[in-house]
Length: 140
Image (cartoon, rainbow, N blue to C red; front, side, top):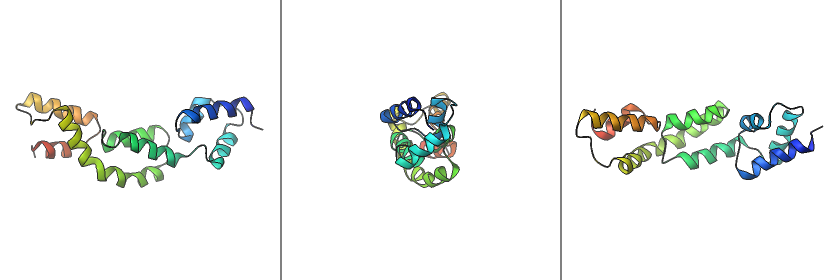
């Protein structure tokens, strides 16, 4: 039997935003009946890892690179199958995102090594690969 208070807390969290199954389980704590509650929420359509992945992609694509997004999905307990299915969508928008982020932040090619390092570090911090960054900046 699932305690009503636990169910209400779970629905309160899900009413505010999407959660992955693992993230919601962590937020609610390790209480008796947790797996049954999560199974019920998935069956009723309140909880969906696939919908959570879509929400993360909609929020992050255009601002972050592949590595940042994949790391975030893995850290939230998303299965490798769902992550694999999201990779093509990430890859198709990565170059546009890199160019957009670079133009917004810098807008000009680096004029010395110090500026080059600054631009590369910033873009790598956003999850873009070094090869793609150097190709954009023209420093193959």
